[in-house]
Image (cartoon, rainbow, N blue to C red; front, top):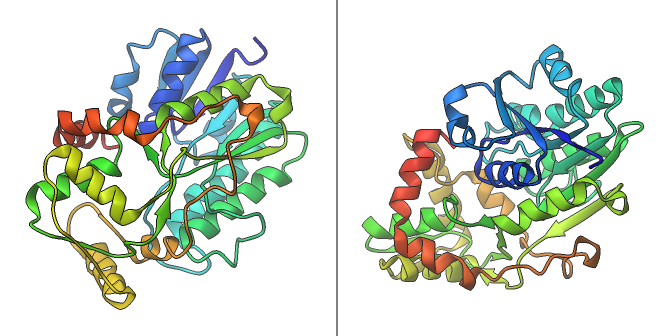
Length: 321
């Protein structure tokens, strides 16, 4: 095993938990840093996973973490941040500066292997031209990884990720449990959802695969849906199907603005609205070299939506994920 000890940055979240489980099943030692230990309690039963309290945005702490491993996987991503040019302070910290810090720490520590999660819709060189702060910052983070010296990096660009406990289909199912009508911005935006298990497998299988060094891979499912179709499917399988009203762009942006400033968790922001200006669809099939046959949404989503999205939502809220 070429990379027996792995630092999993962002390992407490929805995708990270799946990757941690798969790494542990392969008998790899996994180090998961978190600023709050309670966020990672669900990982403690995994026998080869060690959870440590640490701030990966602190260079000294980050270097200590990387100094004890053979490879690093960076999954950190956020969906919301204050507005700013070109991408605002929160996106700058999470999507731009952190990947640059990780790449620099890897180079300084002699750790060559780095796997980095970007996002479908990002294009190389789109740090200024992408329609949203999210996409612009993700593009800048990719470039920081590409520019790092002496690294064997691999970048993945997943579409929206579905699976038990997701915050996408489950959100739409929960909303339809109590809203009589779904007023939907960007209803015609297209997505190609990818199963969380497929994303985890792509990362873990690539870890020891030299053929993936210097590669950038799109991860998407076999089917393309409009947002309206995804919302309808979520409501149908959760047993709360509601009428869907597609909003024109002017009203859609107004809705996004109101939701951005509403109290409580942000359900949608103006930047999310801007991201959906371009389709979240892969340019072609998953690269054959990854050896993945993508899982259809219809094979997974109906079962967990029927079990009740509210339960998964409560579990994720307790874990603050």
